[in-house]
Length: 499
Image 1 (tube, rainbow, N blue to C red):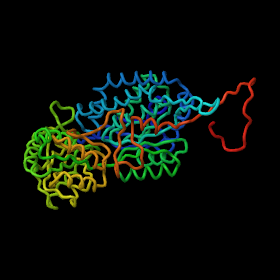
Image 2 (image 1 turned 120 degrees about the horizontal axis):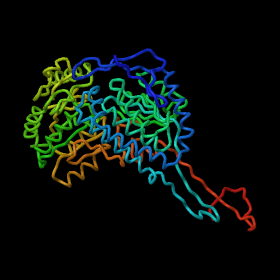
Image 3 (image 1 turned 90 degrees about the vertical axis):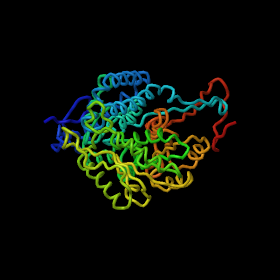
Image 4 (image 1 turned 30 degrees about the horizontal axis):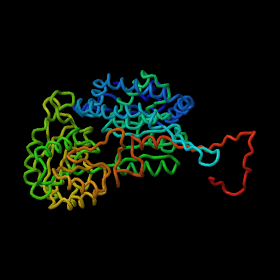
């Protein structure tokens, strides 16, 4: 059976550990390969390679780094179909959905191609007599990324292109559930001309994570995953003196006002809830129906949920593939049962779905729950599956109060025809990313991605300008060039001032 190795110093290596973990095809339920689980020694090997590469890569010209990014961007475009199929085979999402995540990741590479403007410093002439000041930013050194299963290409691409283009070297620890995309990206970097050791991949579980968090050779760690692990990563890595980006979980609400186009709103909420089987940190998991919109909205949501085509991700016409593991399937279906027990109305029940020819796959159909309250598990928990809960409120202010009381603050959306309501919503809501008639408000690469509250531990979002600041540190230089033939002011012992 195929073994998925690490990617260190420009080539695949199996490392020092003999431990492996199965990698499944979620559509068939069958093991298709196994991935090596790295040890602390493997992390050491990767960090050593990255440290050695940093010496020359950090001194390379900005033009050289941008040229590599341009070549890498073209290779991502040329290999989009193949990479999409690799993701689909291990994650379960449709190939078209996988290609979409590659596109959104490629946008960050395009942002990195334009770092010449972003990295420009500033200059102040004659701040004092004969004294000028300028500043610039320099890379940190070896940095690491720890990324989740749900976006095996996009989330790492939100990290390493910016880190590498600013002169750092990178060690990636992807999810062991769908590890192959990371190695494929390593091959593309090699073809793009990136020097060996600048981009490295170490597969593994908690042992590898802990080794990265405590490694003295790593300057910064970027993480995306659940909130409890984000808190652990932030606490552990900051205690070791590292910079940390730690993005946690989400419970994203889409508010629908009575003046909204319900067909439009329901269509986009359905896609946002069930796309990628709900395994997105920006998935719409709660529809907040305001006032008289409720009954009509649920009617349209039910119809659209029943129209979703569920099947293997590589089959034409599939809207939604399986969940990533059997455990995830069981967890989601148990949650639907618990919601019914707690008083929710199961309008559409996706449990027990069997797909012809793929009876052992990890499939569950779309589920739609109505009359959900804030006290129910289906509202409080991040289900990370194709379950949409409808909560009914009387007014927009009640909807805002509901969302602001939720511990998560990743993304939210409002469907309305009222500019006044939209402006009030976006000013009062305590959420980091907001969509107005846009269900999944993932910002473009030249903005930064990050929520509020328990969705972002610390204060460092990813990619965009915040990503550049995270992967670099500033220097400010004050200069004087005295003319020997001219009498200069004598040095003083009091604190210097401008004059």
